[in-house]
Image 1: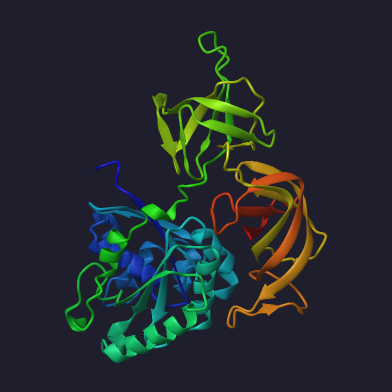
Image 2: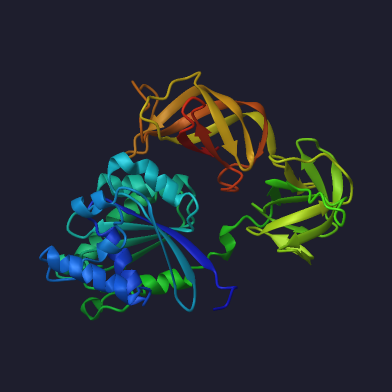
Length: 417
C-alpha cells in the first residue's frame, strides 16, 4: 500500500442507542476490513442472544460491561483502510456522564461523525456533542440520520431533521457540515448506495470519508517544534553530536532556516534535519524529526524551536475553555500541574469566569458548582512562562491538560482562548 495515503481520524458521537457501534461495525464489514474469525465470533454471539441478524455493535463494544448493557462506556479505537485512505475511529460514549471521554476521542480528530436517530430527532446530547466538536475546532462534521428503515426511508423526516440541525449549528463555529441518511443495521448509504432512498444524491458515508479534503486542516504557516528529547549518543564517533527531537506541531522547517529558541530567545540556524537517520532538506507538520543547530546552545525538553519572525504568545497568564473531568468540584485557587506540548510546570486556577449551558449556549455566571463534565471558561497562572498559540490558530500548541498534583489524575482538558 502506498505510504503516502492520508490518515483520516474521526470520532463518532450521539445519544445512547443511536447506533454508533453498529455503524462502525457496518463500515468494517462492508469495507472488507474484518477477519473471518471476527465475523464468525459475532455471528455466534448474536445467535446466542436470540437475534435474527448479526449484531455488528459487538465489534466495538469491547468491555464486558458494555456488551452486557449494550452501550459504549470507554473510548474504543478501531483502525481500517481502503485503497484511497487509512482511518482511525474513536467510538465515544453517548451518556452525558461520559462527556469527558468524547473530548478525549475528539481531541485529535479531523472529523466528527454525529448520529441522530431518525425517530427521535435532535436531542440534548446531539447539541452537546456538536458544541464540543465546535469548541474543539474539529474542521469537518458529518451528520448521519440513522435508522431511516424505521421511518420507512421518509424524505420528509430526513429534511425536517436537517432543517432543525441547520438552525442549531448556525450558532456554532463549524464550516463544513454534511448530511447522510443511513440505516447502519441494513447498510443503506453506509458503504453502498441505498435503492430505498433514491431521493438522496449526496454520496454514501464511505464516499464522503474517502473524499473529504483534509490537507488544509494543519496549520502550515506558524512553524512550531516543541523539543521532546535531546539526543546525545555519548560515543566516540558522535562525541559532539547534539540533536533536538520532537514532533513538528505547525508549519515547516528547512535546512538553513534562521530560528529562535524559546524561552531563551537566542537565534541560530538549522544545520541539518534528520528523520529515521537520513538527512532531509525540509520537514513539516506532523512529521517527527531531529534537528541539529549551527551554534552550541543550551536547549532542553519543553523548549520550543520557532521561526525568527514568527513567535507564539509568551505568558504566564492563560485564558482557557475547559471540560472538567474530576468528580470533585472545581474551586478557585486550586493548584494544578500544567502539561502543554512537551512542557510541564505548576500552576493555579485564579478565576472561574462562567460555565456554559449546552442547550442554549448561554454563559452562566451565577452558578453553585462546577462539576464533572461541565464546560466553561477559567483563568490560570503558570509558574513559568509558556509559549502558545490560541487553540483556534493551532490545536496542538493551543491545548492544555491540567493534572491534580496529589492524585496525578487528569482533571481538565483546556483550549487556550
